[in-house]
Image 1 (cartoon, helix red, strand yellow):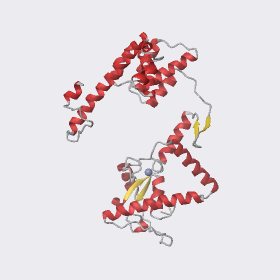
Image 2 (cartoon, rainbow, N blue to C red):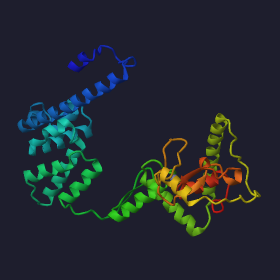
Image 3 (cartoon, rainbow, N blue to C red):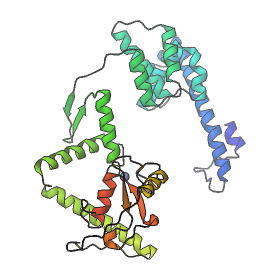
Image 4 (cartoon, protein in one colour):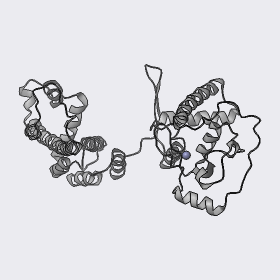
Amino acid sequence: MTLAKEFNLDLSKNSLNLSKIPSAEILFRLERLTKSERKITHLVLWHLVEMDNRKLYLELNYDSLYQYLTKHLAYSESAAYDRIQAMRVLRQAPQVASKIEEGSLNLTQLVRVEQSLKQEKRLGKEVSKDQVFDLLNKVENKTSFETEQIIACELRQAPKTYQKVKPQSDKSIRLELTLSKEQYEILKKAQSYISHIIPENDLAAVISYLAKASIQKKEGKESEQEVQALKTQEEKFKAFESSNFKAEGSPAPSTQSFRGIPKARRKYIAESVKRALLKKAHYRCEHVNPKTKQRCNSKYQLQIDHIMPLAKGGSDKISNLRVLCGVHNRYEARRWGLNPLRQ
Ligand SMILES: [Zn+2]
C-alpha cells in the first residue's frame, strides 16, 4: 500500500479518477507499478515454493496447491496453473529469480519451459539443472513465438506432424496442422500481400481467402454470393470515400459505370523519375488504409501509380505520382472504375 500513499491515492472510494493527473505522472506511475507488480509476482512464486515444500494446503483441507490457489486465494484456473508451473521452474533454477523480477522472463515463458521439461520426462529423457538454466537464459527477453522455437530446437523435441480435424459444437472445425518452415514462410508472405484485405492476424481468414481465390481462378468466374459480397464492400467503401472527399471539398469519384470512357492518353514517365519515386517510397507500397491509417509497405510488384488517373484528367506531374504494390494498383483501378489491365 506504500505506492498508494506515495501517489496520494484515496482508496476508500469505489473508483479512482485520474483525469486530472498529468500524463508524465501517469507514465511514471505505470512504470513504478509494473515494476512492483513483477516484484510481487516473484515473491508470490517464492512463497509458493515453500508452501508446496511444506504441503501447507493440506492443513487447510485442500487436496492440492491448485485447489488452494483457486478456491482459497481466488485465482482464476489459468492464473493458478501458470503460477504453479512457474514455481516449479523457480524451484529447479533459483538463479532465474532476478530475471522474473526484472521482467526479462515472464510467466508464459516459464510455463512453456516447465511444460516442455515435463514432456522430456515423459519420454524418459534426463534434463540436468544446468540445461534448464541454460534454456532459461536462451529464452530471456524473447517473444512467445521465439521461445517456442528455442525450446523446440534446444530440447530437440520431435516435431508433431499429424493433422487433427475436429468438429465443434457450433459447426466450426478445429484444424491443427504442421507446416514446414518453407510452407509457413510462404503462407506469411501470402498473408502480407493481402494484409489490406485481412488486416488482423487471422490465419483462418487468410487460408479461406486464398482458397477462394484459387477456386475463382480455376472456375474462371465469381460465384453469385462472392459478387454480392464484393458489391456491398465496394458500396460501403465508396460511401466512406465520398463522405471523406466531400469533407475536403474535392469531387467524389463517380459511382457510375465507366464503360465508354475514351482510352487515357499515355505519357512516358522517365526512368530517372521512376527511380526517384521508388527511392522516396523506400521501395515499398505507399498505399495508406483510409480506416486504419496504416501504410501497406508491400514490396510486391511495385508500380508507379497516378493518384488521379490520366483517364480522369490527372497529370504525369510528380505530385500526382506514387508507388503502389500490384494489389493496390489493381484495387485503385477498380475503385476508379477503370480496367486494371489497361490503366
Ligand atoms: Zn500495397
